[in-house]
Length: 212
Image (cartoon, one colour):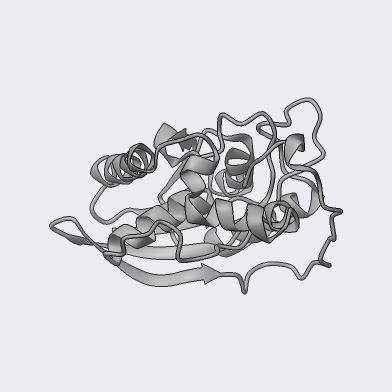
């Protein structure tokens, strides 16, 4: 079985109606289309997504191209799902060295969660995805940075959660090897993505909300 973990495209941090769970912004939608253009050629047989808007919307172009449904699995959601306002890692870094260090020290606690519970939920979602797929399936999973880190750390027997920085709409490829083993074929593929100009954001106060 093959799994490709896709981080969502860039969300709209300025969204006012759903600041806690924003949709993709224009370049995020272009990233989603680029993911679809690549994966539609690779024999994807199933599409799974986090229930959060930015992941589900990233999955939609591929689902439309292949005529497949997007199946939502709760455990693929990000650790920031219960915060009042989404904040990207770029924005968190702009808050300063101390705040960025606090996030890196314990990203799950930063969002008010428990690391063990979050890790258990992600690995349960991984197991559910594998167990409910055919052994020859090729599954695209649209998710987030921290769940991708959890899975990679689990596959590589690493203790900490954060070791990698998946880019927006990047792809990380896994192989299910049997007996619970997961092989890592690639991490953070981005060659399929359009080149976009970096967007600078003014630093915000910590009282303005948090997310990643």
